[in-house]
Length: 228
Image 1 (tube, rainbow, N blue to C red):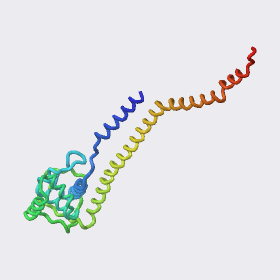
Image 2: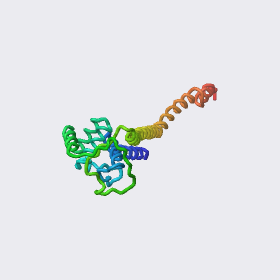
Image 3: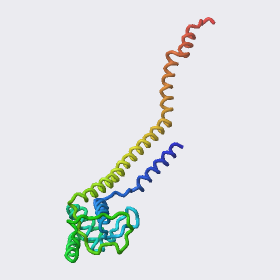
């Protein structure tokens, strides 16, 4: 019975650990969330994703105004971080070099420069296609406002990644404790009685041989009168 319980618990734990693969947010995820929030709260170039927490990469990869706008955020807002841009290139099925070529060609063709303007934020309105900007928007990412977006999104999603890591460690710790407890319990149930009986048997035999009734009767018998 105990062996069956052990196998059942161990099998369930193994299944949970092997099947669970929590998503970890990448540098591109964090950068895209912060850039998309910044852009959408000023002059949006893409409609929000249908799924909560999703990415609208279809728009940012295929729409020239959206592509150039978010690329400008990665370049100037994230100091041309090659890790982020490489991930973005892979997501859009492009090479690192072709992304920059497309970026500069799009800007040279038509762009709206807003780096030195004071932008009025927009909140809460439902976007339609007519609300989207038709040209790339170049924002000012060095005035300190965008840094707030960067820090907030980085803190939130990195903490999410850490919670997944620490949760996995804690789960593994308690799984080990559970397995050890089951093993110890099985050993005690199966072998403790035998060990105790063996030990007690030796003690009893020594007692009977040297102290108990056997030597007493033997001694008394040796003193019996032969005449009787």
